[in-house]
Image (cartoon, rainbow, N blue to C red; front, side, top):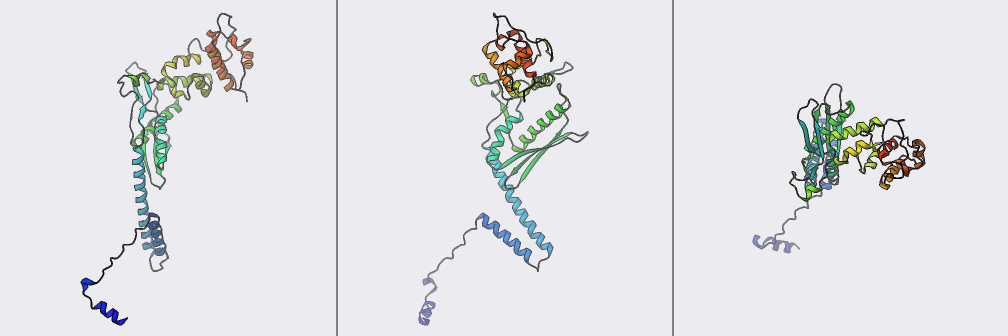
Length: 337
């Protein structure tokens, strides 16, 4: 054995077989994190280190973690932005100034459009969305939009504004309108999205023809005020108008909505003259009767309940000229249960 080793030592350097050293495999992310936590534990258990040194080590670890969380947030937001669908301006604001000045008329996207199009995409990439509102006394309304990634990093954007007293809003509606406006713009600025017109600037063609103009904010405020005045159920009213929510009401249906609420043809107050039987020559259509029954059924009422309070012999005897009055009366009837 000694002779063999001597023989190897006597060989020229160039004849020796050189074996390259193998580089250690890079540790997995979780392994690196475990190693870091292990280092922190070792440092904290070291009795020779001062508390200041221990705090410095822990602060360094927190900075590393915050940096990684920020990197994960940025990557997730960038991925979400690449998947956002187009944001359409689906709401119209149209009203005349009280002093006879110029007409305000413009389109914008509502908060529901932003939430429906963006929040599910953000959630798929681990980002949650929420708002924080503040309404201090004698101070502007403040709204903060907050995005939080599952890795722990959060970013927020804050805007302030006065209550929106335009139109015929009461004090609570003015606050809600301003808060809604601030929620939209804090979200858009934080997420990095912009909206467009449904018809691409009214360029015409089939796409423009398919666009449905919705009621303006001012028109919706008028309808809401009438709903409150008549103590009508908004959900039942929407069902009667064939929409899921009041904001989806087409502008073309505005006059019909006011008629159903007694805005035109005379306001009918509770206890006013009740609809009388129609002559055989003029009766409500089947569609009208179905719509009226839908309202009654939604309130847990039957045909007999309505007829007993209106003096009708049967629902099908209702005269078309009394249909709007009957619909409003049904909306005012007390629901069973």
